Amino acid sequence: MKKLVLLAALVSFFACKSKNEQAQDSILKMEQSIQADTAKKEIDPKKGRELITAYIDFSKSYPADTLAAEYLFKAAELANGMRAPIEALEYYGQVYAKFPNYSKAPLCLFLQGFIYENNLRNVQKAKGIYDDFLTKYPNHPLAKDVRFSLQHLGMSDEELIKLFESQNQSKPAV
Image (cartoon, rainbow, N blue to C red; front, side, top):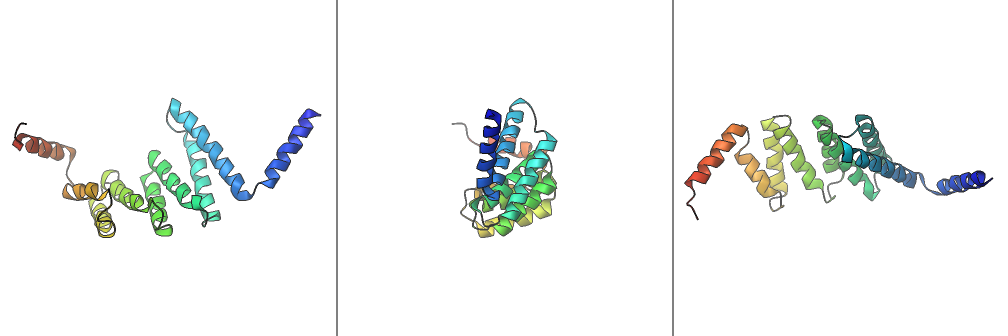
């Protein structure tokens, strides 16, 4: 009898929640499960895919919700963390295009350039995005990093090491 009362209470509780709230609860549970897994090892690809899908579905179903941009951003981060740079680019691009006033929109533009530069080795695309970033956000805290990236775009790790070594040698000792 106690089980039946508990079941009825749970059913009535979830029936009172909106679909939006239910989706948020589901996402939170998936996030917690992945966080528990990452403490032990890498993200379970199946769980990661399910969470990305949940983030995307939420942002499509509730585009006016303040969480839509954040969930889409999290989908991009998770895809990038799962070594899916093309997918991450797509989601960062969607955040930037659909939510231009979102506080992380400039970061999304920067991360697109970063992925093109470092993951996909597409210097031309990276340069175009970095140039756009500096045009739109010349005083953003990331602008210094973007300028640095533009100055050293296309250089190999070995070339960068040699450059930094020569700069260190030419500095006077303090």
